[in-house]
Length: 70
Image (cartoon, rainbow, N blue to C red; front, side):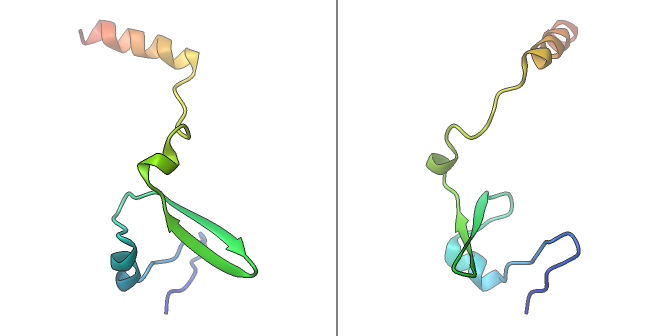
C-alpha cells in the first residue's frame, strides 16, 4: 500500500500507471471532491497556455548568451 512521505509524495502503483498511460515526466492534476483525491493525466491540450514565457530581464541574459555562442 502506498505511503505518503514527509514531502507529501506518493508512489503511484505500476498497474495504475499502466491503466492511465502515465510515464515519468507526465503532468498530472490532483484534486479533491467529496473527500476523495482524484488524479488526472494532463494532455497537451490541457496544458496549452499554462506555461509562461521568460520575463523581460531574462531576454537580456538570452541576448548575452547568443552573443557569446553565435
